[in-house]
Length: 286
Image 1: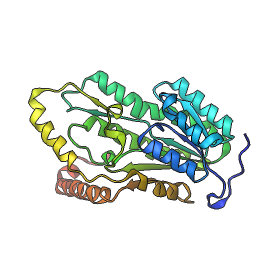
Image 2: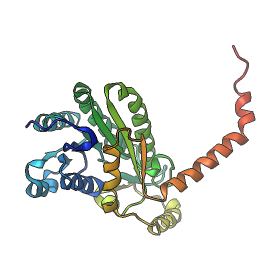
Image 3: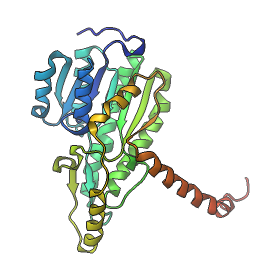
Image 4: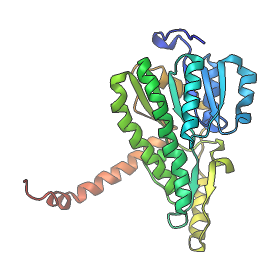
């Protein structure tokens, strides 16, 4: 299939490759892109979970089975999507899940599995897509992180750590690929009423009685959080992909910036308070 050439202002339909398109933001954004006339290679672990997209949107969507923890499958899916549509304009890394458990409770096996999906799976997609994006001389990589990529919370600390790694990878990537005409944006949603809290998106470590009361209190505080409407997010995403100079980071939601501003103010105050100790550790210039 030969797509139209790109034109200024996003007049030509954009070609998306989206991981984790079966539910949550991945599903919302895939459908929104299709509804605005773009074309989407939509991927999910189970092809049946996205089969209805083809029924609804026809040739504008290419459903692909993809487990991001399988590098060869990732390479095949990226190559299929690129060959089918003729190019890839946007690569949206959305697949991921959360591991729930304190640092003491979660096993190393559970932590490895989390990183296989949230970090190494993301890198597999990036490394498969980048040669094609470099060859075509353009592309926009979107990585779905979280406010937790800046602010870690208890009980989901390992999930937050995967997002801190995710943020660092994309920040480095943005500088590395800019000379090739490739843009990078990290999407950082706050709390939203998606399926991310469903069993398919959560893994629970075996609990220790010592943390039972603490976790009950923590889960209670989460239930009181005001959650955003996922249907309100596509306009922000389109503003980013249609921008000539998109930001490296974009918060989704109104609570993110005040929270992160407060956390960084506290960090800066601590570093300033301990500056004399830090500076003394520099020693004499050699």
